[in-house]
Length: 95
Length: 264
Image (tube, rainbow over all chains, first blue to last red; front, side, top):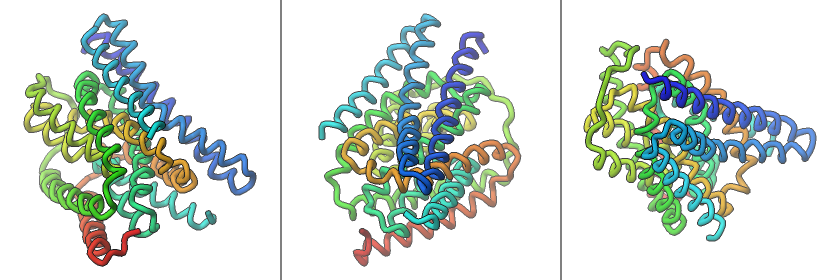
């Protein structure tokens, strides 16, 4: 195992973990609070948005990490995936 | 929504996420039909909600596999080029497909997945848990990309992860060890499902469903975090058998609804 690959794995795992636990905490808090205050549903929505954003964040983090490793081939692959996902986002809004 | 329904959704999510993580399955394959059949949601809405659960499972469980260097991140990113493209196209097409066609497609995929799990269950009786990842060289990228395009397409159409398509192709044709193939497929699912989720979200199929999706996703998170932790310690044979029965039942029920026109 190369040192760089281990570092990439670590930072990606961290990104996924932070995204997962943040979304989880917000959603649980929101679901419980919505029975008490209308503001609860706003927290829930924030949790769902974090959930939706985490995969994109993960692509960006991977891409940046590949650039730092001077692995331009996979940096480009990451950029390609990012472009498709962003395209989906805009197509979704338009249609 | 009443407290009772919310509680039911949490339990459903917990079971789907937990058993899904134990069996290496997204959980979407269980959730879409259950939401459509028993919660009487329109199938497009059920798919959108299921996609959120699939993202939750993938995000919650893949961090552990990535951390332990089981996931092949480079292979995953490469195949994601195809899965996201497939998901994008399929999510656009799905809007124009009627619910019966989607339901029939779903029944076919349920049957296929159940069959592939029978094979897996049979194998799990003898196989020891692999603890180390052997060296390997990835082969046959074109075939892998083609299968990923189809898997991504099914993900966007049906609100599933597409693991039962990608894992065998990576294992059998790309010569990736089974454990790596499963972890990498799981890693890709989040991005793939997010791609089609954006389109469903933009269409408004999801904004109205946040109230239903949230308790479900909360349950899925808890279930899959627990499942992923237990997975290395649990004998999967009985879990696989249970899931095969559940999937068979859901396929039959959905087919019955299609024939009798009882699907909303």
